[in-house]
Length: 321
Image (cartoon, rainbow, N blue to C red; front, side, top):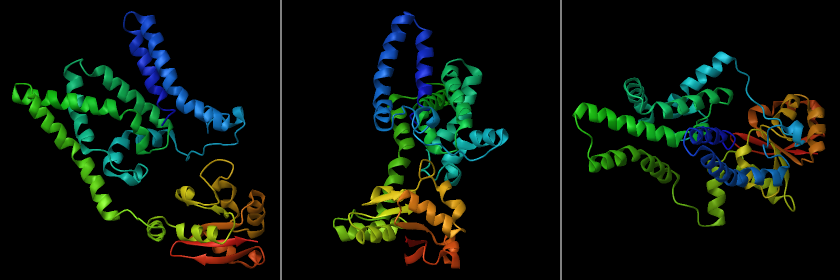
């Protein structure tokens, strides 16, 4: 999201360039933008040597190469056009993130109606559409919309109020607008409250924490077992369990991209000797992977290289000998 946020810098600079005194506004805006950008980009530069990490790995030598799913231009356009719809009603097509407010989606026809009849919201709508065009080059995930959501919400509110004014023949009163805003915002705390109630109380003991994490994070129990049986902590290569990185007491290798990318390991799952060599080159002591991907480790070629230690309903933990 921090890279897509550069769109806001370009949009803001364009707006400043249209106002007088132009250069004074541009310089002030540029200074403020640089101060804000220095936090995220400076931190990346300090930690990785690449202010655009993980991109441009070849230029900065960080070894990371983002992996994008293959897609035709037609598929990219359709996915982008459907992203607002998917982010509200089909989370499985938008990164499985919490849904956006339905009000944002319902306001789009009102926004189109307002833009067609007046110039008031055309500039903001153009910025919104320009950003959606940019998203055609990104994976389809709802969190990429965070950059433009504040503008989208303001446009939705303005279009809704204008539609109500046209229907009523008079502007909505301030108390009425405030009440409408509260009603439209209400689903968010209700959604959060529902999931908080479903999750139960916050664990207050170490044992309760372990029980909770094992129930909510697939593979956690096996990772914790490996950590308990290795000092000072296990070095585990985890396949398709990147959500466990925050909980490893030792080291958990494995991600969709980077020096320990899944692509380094996945092709060798049916070839135990090569898989063993790759994991040992990384220093991995254990292999944690979904049960359905562990069939190759049960072949005769894995004898003496891997040993099954434990398993649960979804994952298996193997020792890399």
